[in-house]
Image (tube, rainbow, N blue to C red; front, top):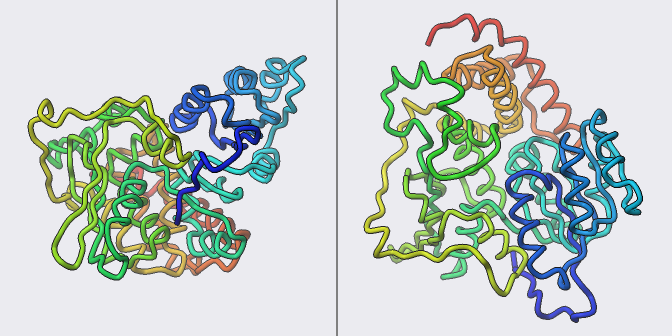
Length: 395
């Protein structure tokens, strides 16, 4: 992977950008960066899930050519908000796919879930799930088409930068850091009784509910392990996780001579996004290490946070297990938000779905995007079939 140099482009030829998931936290940070140097970028397409009014406002502000909402019921708000602007509006899953296919130099993939399987000439990827669902296919397609995949996740962007410090053959392992989430110091018995309100109180980051709950279960780190496997062609045993509550060190790379290169940065997603956009300047706050005083690290507790162990096991299993894992987790998180299952029920439902998928033939290595989506669909159906059993259990 190589970062394109934005300065090499003529000033008269702005780089075109599409943002898939424009109203979320990553999309909002990207939009903030684009506003700072409007002469360098032209926005081709924007998408959102269901906030049509907000998407319309953003599309007008950034001068987008095309805007699409996934939820068709939000089309009225989008269309009304864009009236007279000349910006094309659309709705539905096909419209979101169309946004990803529109000609653009860069596509910022910030969609949560399995919908972000499209790419552009250069894809700045903030969506873990497309690599979890179909990572082998995704990276092969990128290689075949000559696309450049750049990681926006702070952890993977940190690894991307730290890996440049030495020869690839000298890398012995990479280390992904985890904040530990809101339940890092909670006893297992208290975690079992955790409420939705408590799970949504992330100590360091402001994120959407799905990602925040994944952080509380540590499933987000499990997904990041799988993502790192595909992005950097590393086996599961060369990817480690350490809990680092300050969230200042985002990733580390250990080399054969024992040296460890660490990437440090403030709690601001504009830093990795700006790096992927080859931005010359960034408005994010600078670190004051003396003020921080100390940085601490802990081993993750797989007994209190079994989701992380499930992800490692799924990566080692292969045969579509990570696709099943992601689908089951999305169902489980939604059911926890709805109050159907307890917090420990999230991991329990994922584990039961993985076991059931192996027995029933649902688990299979997808050979195409359509097959990946079929495994995803079958896994969601299986998870919902298993839901009453998990909901009835006391943890």
